[in-house]
Image (cartoon, rainbow, N blue to C red; front, side):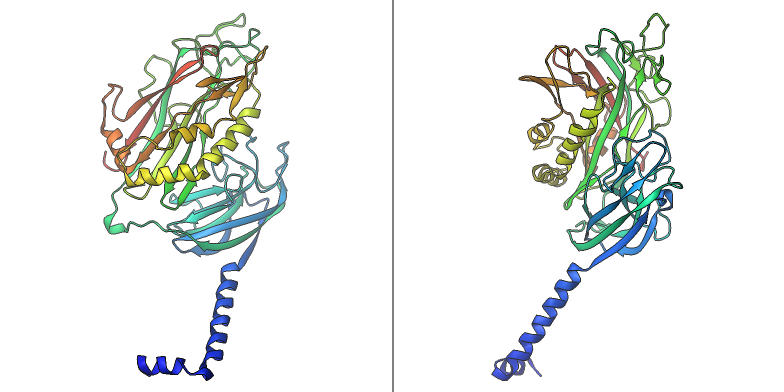
Length: 438
C-alpha cells in the first residue's frame, strides 16, 4: 500500500475505531513501562561487598530511589535509616567516602563485575534521591559501613527510571585531562577568639574541609567530601594531630597561634609529600574534566574546633544540599560549562545566601560550636561567607600551568577572614595539577 492508499484507507469510518483502540493500548503500555519499578533488598551486612543489581543503565537514564527500613550498625553507632548520618567513626575502610555514612549508597561503574572500579560515581541517599546516569553504567547498592559483618536489618529500595539529558559531546571531539586538587597546607595569620579556660585545647584547634560537586548540562553529581583530623593541642586528645606553638603547664603539646603553619616550616603552599586523606597535603579530588561537558564546584573551608558539632552536622549539611540542588546554581554552572575560561560564578550572591543559616550568636558568653572561619556580622549573628572555585577543563588547565603569584605552578591562596570580634584569619593553599600531560 502506497502513501496515497494509506491516507485513503485511514479516512474510511470503519478503520477509525480499531486504530484508536490500538493507539490507546500502545499508550497504556508505554505508561506502564515508564512507571515500572524494580525492588532490591540491601542487607545490612553488604558493606564493601556491594549488592549487584545486575542492571546496566543506558546513557541518559534518570534513576529515582525510594528506600525504607533500618540497619543497626552496632558498636555504639546506632540504628539508621537509608539517609544515614554525618556522625560516624572517622576511620578508613568505608565502601564510599561520602558525607553521609551508615545509610544507603548507590554506585555506577564502568565495570560489570568490579564495584571498586576506578571509573565510578557514588550517590548517598542522605544527599540525593535521584541522579542522572549521564554516561550510563552498572548499578550497585550498599549499606555504607566500614565493618558491616555484624550488622542487622536491611534497606528496601524501590527504583524507577526516567530519562535525562546525556553528555552532548562525543568521544571524537572530547578535550579531556585528568586533574588532581589538593589543599597543601594552611597558615594562621591570627587565631580566633578562644574560650578563656581553653577547655577545647590551648589556642586554636582546627580542621580543613572541602565539599564539592561535579556538574554537567543535566545537573549535579555530588562528590565525596573530604575532612582532615583536628590539628592543634594533643594533650588529652589522642586522635588529634599535634601541631602549633601553643604551650601550657602540661608542656608544648601544640595549639595553633599567629604565624603557625601546617605543615610546619613556614611554606605551607609547597607540597613535600604525596597527598593524604587525614591531613594536608589533603587530597580533595582526582578525576577527569572534559571541555564543554563538565565543571567542578569546590567549597573549601577551615574550621575552628569547639566540640559542639550541631552547626557542622545540621545547618552546614543542609546548606550544602541546597547549593548542589539549587536551580540558580545549576543554571550558573551550565553557564560556566558554556564559557569555560570564566572562573567566576554568576550566582555567587545566591551561593552565599544559601549559607545564611550557618551562623553563631553574639550574645554573652559566646556560642561555642565547631564553625568555619570567615564569618561576617549580620545583626544578632555572625554568618559564614563561603569561598569557592569553579573548575572547567579550560580553567583547570590554565591554573595548573600558571605561577603568577610565585607560590608554584597551580597554587592559589584563599584567605578566610572573620569579623573583627571573632578575630580569626587563616589562609588555605590549594593546588590544581594536570596529571595526564605532566
